[in-house]
Figure (cartoon, protein in one colour):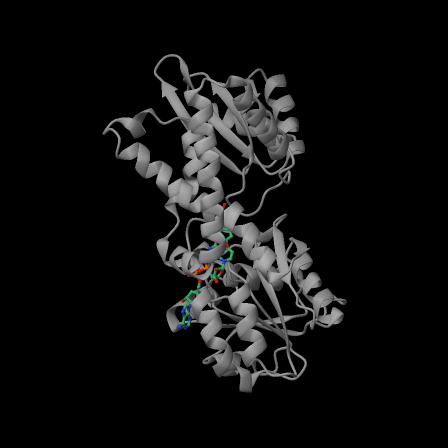
Length: 365
Ligand SMILES: NC(=O)C1=CN([C@@H]2O[C@H](COP(=O)(O)OP(=O)(O)OC[C@H]3O[C@@H](n4cnc5c(N)ncnc54)[C@H](O)[C@@H]3O)[C@@H](O)[C@H]2O)C=CC1
Ligand SMILES: O=C(O)C(=O)Cc1ccc(O)cc1
């Protein structure tokens, strides 16, 4: 790629996010050499998986000569790595990070990074419930929002070069002040994480059989309850103020809902449903990441050998690629139902046409 503004990128922390960024850069900015640094066994794995071009034995060696430095450690380690890194940074380098909370990292960068580099905070709004180098995937950022948090001092060239990084990995840049970012993610990411965990616990502890009755809605709403705590511990500590504000606001809303239910105020609840439907329709069509909500359909098939082939063949013939196939249920004698997921609304609609034309009962899910 000729107009990619960086030649040598150091990725410090080659886990889920760093490994995915490294791999996406290798794929889409082939002129840029990607050097990784992590714990030796992780780095070994990153190289084995082809996520990086080269391994560095130390942080200093990784950033030596790098015009782009991506800090992709856990948040506290990102902040604590800056000071020891400072003397090794190359003049003119752009330093960025991926931490889920921005104000503290931006403050730390302003305090300890040398004048001759520019720090631009970043946060890809894409992730997965599994961490680590083995979960890294260059497709992770496709269609994701990717927040950049420049300050008043950030030179416009550094910001536009970071936009190029975001775009080359398939994401959409969203520029926000660090404090605005932290307030927003408290509501769309940190509070939902706490609610998912609380919902699962609330149901599971109410009755031994409760989870056996949970349908798709409960599953959709609680997917992120499987996320590992290690990262979240740092997020809850790092964004405590905004999370407490969001919790207080949310508690007031929940109390209002409680009053509406108690008073049988269906008009008020209907208004809430309408407002939520309206707002949800404005969610980005392709939400972020590997775990994004996908375009699904269900297909009923007869109980006979070769059923999966019978579905996949006409789709392959029509050049429709399937992201995921899940067998939802099988009943002896009466057949089964598959759930198929596609990457886009267009692919889903083509698939529905193809499958129905082939004689299946396929419906958008
Ligand atoms: N997991 C997610 O869904 C998202 C995470 N983030 C941010 O990305 C950053 C990394 O998170 P993940 O990639 O999920 O975690 P991860 O655990 O997959 O990756 C972190 C990497 O840092 C390395 N590391 C940690 N301490 C180290 C040390 N002292 N020396 C050398 N290497 C060390 C680990 O070995 C690991 O490979 C965090 O700052 C997080 O806030 C941002 C968006 C989404
Ligand atoms: O998988 C999901 O839906 C997520 O919300 C993942 C996620 C986790 C942490 C972040 O800072 C950003 C995104």
